[in-house]
Length: 132
Image (tube, rainbow, N blue to C red; front, side, top):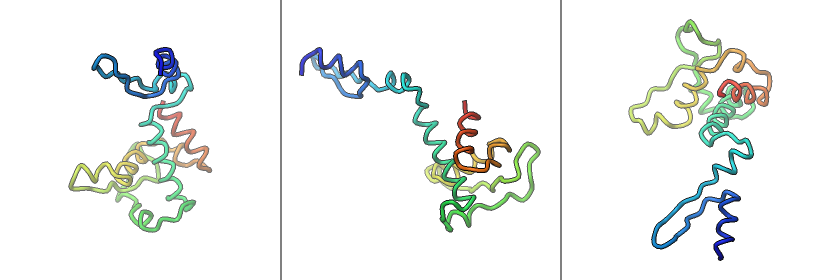
């Protein structure tokens, strides 16, 4: 592989290690991602989690074990929507970052118009607009 091939790969944006004189340089694909107009991986994962919770809540995806854990809180807060869920308490931080506790806390922070969307597409577009 010649040096011009390596520079072409850098311009494309591939993540790869380049070893020059014993030093390691890593080139990441951020240039390619920003040029495509994609959101960050964290934002895309957040939208995927919220979309899946929407599908479970509205019965699009049948998951009885998770649906049984989606319980309404005892009383409604002042600045909340009607479809909030009770937060799941965990003893370890490891479990607190799992799907349900993390998704429920993000779901409860959504606006009323976003949660009351009629379809999954409308929901994800509103959640993405709310995020940015």
